[in-house]
Amino acid sequence: MTLPPGQRAVDGFPRFGTHLHRPPPPVPADPVIAIEGALTETFALSMTDLAKPPRRELGADFHCVAGWSATGLRWEGTGFEYLYRTRVEPLIEPGASISHVVFEGLDGFRSIVLLEDALADDVLIADRLDGRPLNGDHGAPVRLVSPSQYGFVNIKHLCRIEFRTSEPPVLDRFSPLAAHRRARVWHEERHRFLPGRVVRPLFRMLIGPIRRLSARGSRQSPL
Ligand SMILES: Nc1nc2c(c(=O)[nH]1)N[C@H]1C(S)=C(S)[C@@H](COP(=O)(O)O)O[C@H]1N2
Ligand SMILES: [Mo]
Figure 1 (cartoon, rainbow, N blue to C red):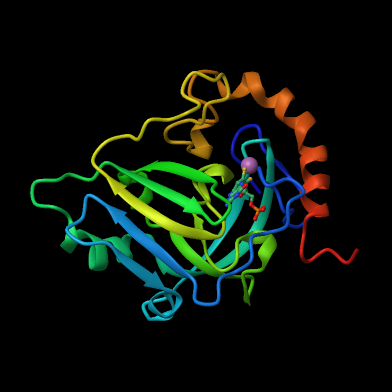
Figure 2: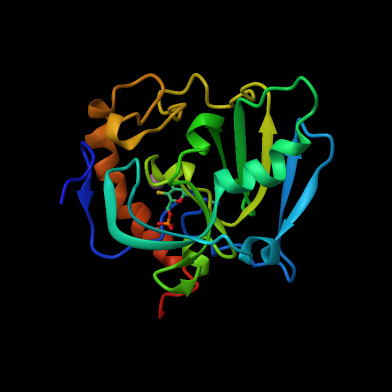
């Protein structure tokens, strides 16, 4: 089994993220994804919309920027490109050219993705993992799955997608750990300013503590 540069396989699929010990956000009674941006109208994408065919299945590994990889996951959901072509493209403001997509979760965590990367064939909005509905640990009710990009792109608890004609102002632009614009795992694009190799050791040290803290906030852990 080959992993992208600087990655090591872990057992299972840990809960991991900036939420640390906080429990997953409660799933709203009627969850929707707000579709916004340079569009002639905004709309709310419902879980019923996402359950409609065509459905996609995707077997993939998952790579966190900190250096762990979960292998052999099986996701099910809607292809992002299909959603874009059928529901979003017809609504783009005349003359506008979409360049960036912002994904946001119910906990406020966001990622910014180039449209061309979001339209890759392996990008899904997933509602099932390994044959079961997504649980709170891994992003209920739905999450973005883009396995060719680092975990931080793969927004859990997805509640908003914004289609933009320019890159939004990024708060962490001048931080040494600012996220890479493309975050492609096979190119080891971990950060905007530092080469991936340089940050590997620092990140390795963080995996254990973040993993343990995140598990403490898990709704699934049998405490
Ligand atoms: N909403 C939300 N999505 C998130 C995060 C987060 O903190 N909140 N963390 C990201 C990071 S850094 C990683 S590695 C993956 C972890 O996904 P998992 O908890 O399903 O393993 O989720 C990503 N998506
Ligand atoms: Mo991550």
